[in-house]
Amino acid sequence: MLVTMKDPAVVYDPVWSPDGKSLRVDVADRLGGRPLIWEVSLDGTGLHRMLPGGTNSPDNECCGRWTPDGKYFLSESRGQVWALSRKAGPFQNQPNPIQLTFSPLVMADPTPSIDGKKLFVVGKRFNAELMRYDMKSSQFFPFMGGIPAEFAAFSKDGQWVAYVSYPNGALWRSKLDGSERLQLTYPPSYLFSPSYAFLPRWSPDGKTIVFFETDSHGAAKIYGVSADGMPPQLLMPDDQSQQLDPNWSPDENKIVFGGAGNDPASTIRILDLKTHQVDTLPGSLGLFSPRWSPDGRYIPALSIDSTRLLLFDFQTQKWTELAKGRVGWLEFSHDGRYLQFLDSTGSGTVWKIRLSDGKKEQVVDLKNFVTAGYYGSSLAIAPDDSPLLLRDSGTQDIYSLDWERSLN
Image 1 (cartoon, rainbow, N blue to C red):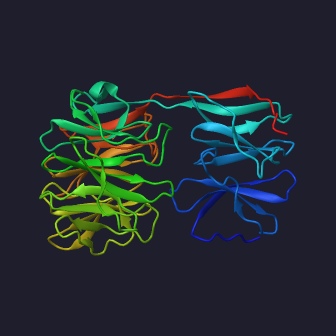
Image 2: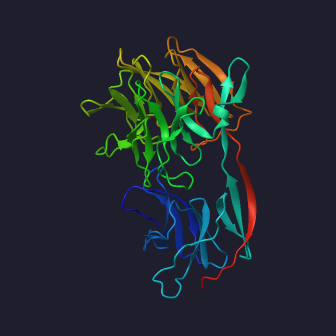
Image 3: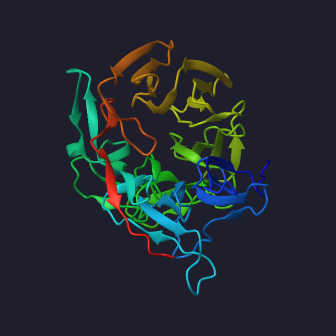
């Protein structure tokens, strides 16, 4: 059987109906997009979305399972469990999804018991602490009181910090002591919403913060927001390409950004804020996640499979390879001499490379540190160049729920 979608799609987690006549799958319209559940008949016909959308339907649907009798389809959405009857009720054209759980925990992976009388779920409580690795004592200490935040970025004068609250994804700014705290974005209340803010960066003059968000279809767009709290504005509203990882040029006139990881068409591009012209960095096809060095000479980036770290030199107009591994989260030291990054090979390691000669040094081995974050981990550096990582302090347990089926 060959099932084709109208647009390019990522299809995964297939589940056969108990009678073997149909297949339900999670479908995202692009890599990283929010999934929806679709159904198709055994012969490949009748492809349709299970839930048409609207105020009564969940979104970000995934992880479906049938009850043993085939009467209900269970799935998770917005951190809770939903049930969809096989048949529509009285006065209904089609069955409506019913929310089964209303828990302060995130309820995931619903699995019915063999007799259909119980429902087993994984209850997750997301929590984390921002920690700073002190290189003199070789120990981790809470940073800013261990606030649950990731993607910390600091103004050039070191007085202000921008960060994203975990796990709801709101962008904030404050003084380093936590005072003068101001929320800059307002995502929906449910966890890991499409409007999660990523990788904020301060302009050199400290007046503007750029960041990116993804919409419900996985399309990433770059925004700029005033540090005083004015509404965020799209920087390139007419550009239909993926826009991730914005970073300022030292002279504040340009922004470098990339495409999405795992996208072979991703390139490193530069937006001129005065002319609004966008140019592609030579030789950058298949690269993403750029940064701009403090002196303006270099732009490092990653291969789309995150296995190679490369460096572009504006003087030579050439790329050179700096490191291999499972590389991510590039951060320049404040003097621009070193580039720190997280290698997630094995238990994970923070490394730094000296740009003058390519010498690689281990900063900290993360074998006893359990990371957290939207992507499972992230790395930032404090004003003194010490690594900042989010440590997982959440919980995860299996729960057994009794549930009454009364939709027939």
